[in-house]
Image 1 (cartoon, rainbow, N blue to C red):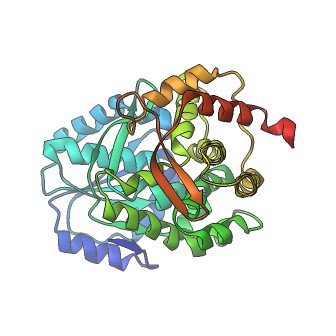
Image 2 (cartoon, helix red, strand yellow; image 1 turned 180 degrees about the horizontal axis):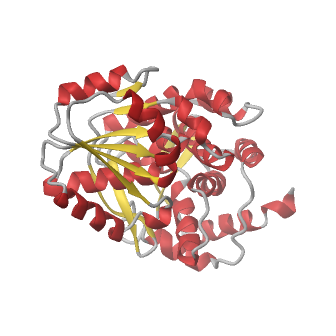
Amino acid sequence: MIKELDKDFSSLNEYIGQLSPSKIFILVDENTHDHCLPILMPNLETDAPFEIIEIEAGEENKNIGTATQLWEIFSEMEADRKSLLINLGGGVVTDMGGFVASTYKRGFKFINIPTTLLAMCDASIGGKTGIDHQYLKNIIGTFALPEAIFFYPKFLETLKFEELRSGFAEMLKHGLIADGNHWNDLSSLYKVTPEDVAPFISRSMAIKNDVVTKDFKEENIRKILNFGHTIGHAVESLFLRKGNLIPHGEAVALGMICETHLAFLAGLIDVEVSSTIITKIQRFFPYIDISEFRNEDILNLMFNDKKNQDGDINFSLINGVGTCAYDQKLHADQINLTLDFYKNINSKA
């Protein structure tokens, strides 16, 4: 269930009442502790005992060490399989919270209340939970659906612009892979503000949820959600390894530019469509300089991608605006051409 929260959070309270949990844990990071928890707590009505657990913010903390700490806290606080975890936060909190809840005592229930645009439109939906390990994004994880997702667009007012723009990348992706009208609406926006993007959040969430419902374990069509992520995740991992983090959405935007160009090289779209899409993405996102990374380093990380099999690099590539093909196997020379294209894209402007 995906539901927008009303002003008094009555739908959330009713839902928790129906679940009748033995204990409630509310997972936050220091940002959502300061900015979002004060909105949730006055509206939360429950007879169940609850505990607030705070973790450090940031992708660098989405690791096995933090997961272990959370498992130990659950043990100390005597969590059982009738407990409920409320993940109040962005993608790190929903990924991490879902992972620890789905593995502790073989799983107890959790719900997501995403507080960032990225979490609302992407991370909180679909039941993919996970942590990073050895600088590889989401390499350890489970498929575990939240009991429900409640979103509250006013939380977006607490975000820095860079965080809002990061989530906007996933919205653009949803339009490119599944809904040309959604892409046209979003790419025509003059600027990215909470007020401007709010009317389109439900559609983006519905696109992802529809795809996930058809293919929960990512055996076929769900793979289209990885458009922009094969190259994007590799670049993101290289920056993570350096200790120089880049926003996930900016990595995805880079990935979508590269993989749109790959779609052109593969003959799936023509040069005009490719150029138009790339130009529109560039209008919203800054150029990320990857000249310090060798193409070979990026390729090696892409070979580690979870979608790959038998040594091939599989891509999900658009074959039109609003449609996408998965399991597209491309040669290293095509990928090298695309990486070189991106590295030199500013000189072509």
